[in-house]
Structures are given as structure tokens and as C-alpha cells.
Image (cartoon, rainbow, N blue to C red; front, side):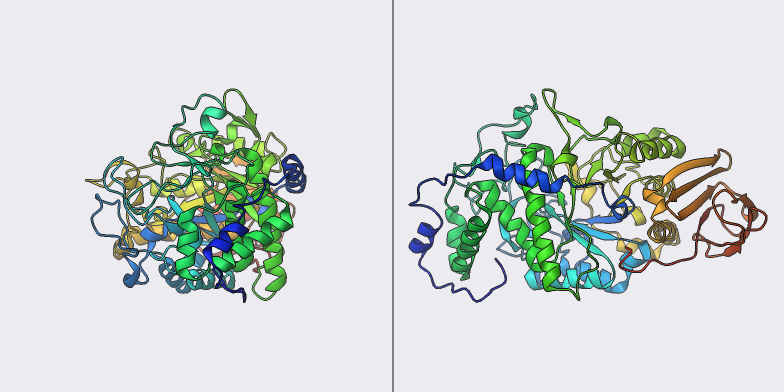
Length: 572
């Protein structure tokens, strides 16, 4: 896959198709044994506290920053889409440029999550709300190549190397349950690979899983264990590109090593884990997780963990540390207040038992609109520390690419949004532009494309936008410097002014909001030892605890207090 390892590509299509199983008897593999093995390996313990404090920056590369205008329209794509439904030019080079500028460092970002960057539909579809191209990355055409609108494999490798050099991890967004829509240039996958005749009706587990998510997305038969041939559109494409021999040889080696049947889900798992094995991808954000049999995710986690361990063994100078592969799932509708299970109606599934370290928390956006910080923070802390979700991870968000009920669509509460997201127990997902109040309501745009406007870099010319960014940056630096912020135990110390502490082992922080501007005193003896030096991460000022009290004189009504230490890359 992608990188050439000396395997000859000069093999006939006929011979390779034979090798890919066309003339074989179906393999007799005990699939339950392979699943059981995966389940045993992925259920090994609690989530790393790092991932319950991490700041994960989520972007659609196409809408973030255009680093190379020469690749804006690849594969014959045209500038003929409905408003905001075509490619805008953002790419991997643009992400690299912002990494090199230190933009993510200033925000305290621990990991970048990019929407899928593998090759997408070449053509547009007119179904839905207007002519639309796969700028968003969720219409897969070939899981083994970087889409040329985003760049190429060498740029992905450079991006990961650059991010790792700055202590930032890289998560790829993965799709397993569907292909892209059928168009004149993007043919339907074979019937043994996908179904295109039944749309989900949400009637229980099978009505959510064994069906098409929407009418124009053919559903991969992830329930099947029947061996299948490679789709002809892939063998023909790889032959044109001169890599068919390598791809088939690698597939043969994968199936021989694992013993999995050559069923569709196992092909895709092989292709996805190759990104980890070859480039050192640190984790996956799994799209539409509830629309695939949960056992599939256990196998993906097992193979991804093995792949990352192999990459780290080969690249000891490039790895950040020995942390395991990380997997966070989008189980649409899952909320932290529901405990560990997702209820399909006729079946409950605990996705944490199937390889997920964390799940996206769909609870917080609605609660943030109607509840104060303490009611959210205290309940989340109780659930994550000794409660129903003890040892599990959650990823909080307030805005996203497909939630039309995102918090503060009008961007009138940017300061409040930063407080509620960046100080909430659990990990924090910044959706690109949250920190600049990027518009989420775009005139003349229909549907979820409103949520995907280009990054508003030009607004940084405005003082108010720079002030909003500075606010997010200070909260981000505080969280990154102290794991207790997201992963510690919350305790309210005062209701007015609002003051609370968080504690994780020997890491302690104190947050005081609605304080006086200028001189201010806060009782801190229950959090910090007498005489200890404490830093306010909002103003940069430092003070020592004297008789249990801390005194500051700053131009802000906020105190973000913790030891003035900087974590090294291995701690992050």
C-alpha cells in the first residue's frame, strides 16, 4: 500500500485476480475465535488520563487553509457545485503551514483530528440540497491513497512528522460502513461488497446497522464473513497506477497472518491500519460507529494497536512516547448522562467494550445552552471519577460539522463557550474556528454545509477576534499544562464568585471566575501547600501561598491557577 517495499508491480491482472481469491473455495475460518481474540486484547483497562484532558482540534482540511492552490481541482473536478458544497482548496500543506507557524501550540492542542483524507468520489452528486463534491471526506472511493485535492502520501508523512516534532498527535477519521454515492465516474461496488436497496428505518439494532445510512450511500456488508474478490474498480485503478502487484501481495500477507476471511470488513481494516503502520498515525476517530457491528471495532483496535507498535519499533526517534493507539467513536446520540450503554431499542451496546477508549459526548451542547457550569462540571466529574463512566473517556464538543443544533450558532457567546468546553471534565474538541467565532450560519447555504464555512483567517484583523482567540489560547495553555483540568476530580469551593478545584494525584489546579479586576484574594490553602509558587495562566502573574491565601493584581476577572511548570513532550 502506497509506499513501495521492493515488490514487483509487473504482474498480470488475471494472475492477481486469481491470487485475490477468485478461484478458491471459501476459506474455513472460525470467525468467532478471531473476534473473541480481539475482544480479549482490547478490554485491558482504563483510559489513559492524558486522553481525558486532551485538546483535540478537529478540522475539515479543505476548509482550513490552502497551502497549495495547484491541487484545488483534482481528478477533473469542476467549480460547479452548489454554494459551499464544492472543494475550497484547503489541504495538508495548509495544515503543515499552520503547524510550522505554531498556531496549534498557542492553543495548547494535543492532537489534530482531520476529516478523512483518503481518496474520495471524483464526481459530484445532485442528490440532496444541490450539486455536491466530497470536500468533507466522507465519500470514500479508495481507502489506500491520499485524495489529490488534499495532497499526497509524502505530505501526510511530513504532516505527521511535523506534528510529532511539536508534541502533537494526529488522528485520522475513518469510515467503514459505506462507500461514496454512485455517479457517472464513481461506480457501484459489487453486490457482495455493498447493499444499495435498503435505507435504515432505525427500528432496533438491525434497522440501524444492516442498511444504508441514507439513500445515496451504499452500505458495506460489514456483517458478512463470506470471502469476496477485490472490486474491479480498484484492481483496474491500481493496475493503471502500477501498484496492483504490491497491493495484492500485501493483502495476501495480511490474510495469511491474521487468518481472517477475505470479507469486506477485513479488507477495509487492512487498508485503514496501513496508515498507522506506514506513517505512525496515533489514533482514529471512527465515523458512524453505531452503524457497524460493534465486534468489527474490536478487530480494528487490535490491528491498529499492533500496527502502531510496529511503527514505533521501526521509528524510535520519531515516536512521542509509548502510549497505545487511541480510538474515539462517534456513536451519534450517545451522551454521558446515559452511562456506558447505547440503547438501540432492542439491544444495548457498551461500545467501550469493543475497543473504544473514548466516545464523543452529544450531551454537552444542549446542556451548555440551558445550564450553568457547576451543574455540568460536577455531574460529569462524578460520572468519570468513581461513577458509571469511571475509567472511560469522553470527548466534549459544542460545535461540529454535522450537528445543526450546535451551541451558539450565532456566535454571540464565544467567551462562555470557551469556559464551558475548555474547563469541562473530559477531553475537549475544538471545531476549527471556534476560537475565532467562525460563522456557523451562512446566507445562501443549505443544510450542514452552513457549519463548514472556510476558516475566517481574515477576521484576525479585528481586535475583537484577536481577543476571542487570546481567551481560547489561555484556557488551552492552562489545560495542556495541567492534566487535572480535564482528568481530575472536581470540587466546588465557592458559588459566588464561582471557584472550584480539580485534583489528579499530585496535580492540583484552582479556577476562580467573576473575580474583581485589579487586586483580588482567593483562599487556596486547601489546594496548594503553604509557601508554594502558583501561576495564574490567564495573566501570567505568579504568587506564593501565604497563610493559605493567594493575592493577585491583574487586569482580568479570571484566575487559572496551577504550578508554573511546563510538561515535556513525553508527558503529553
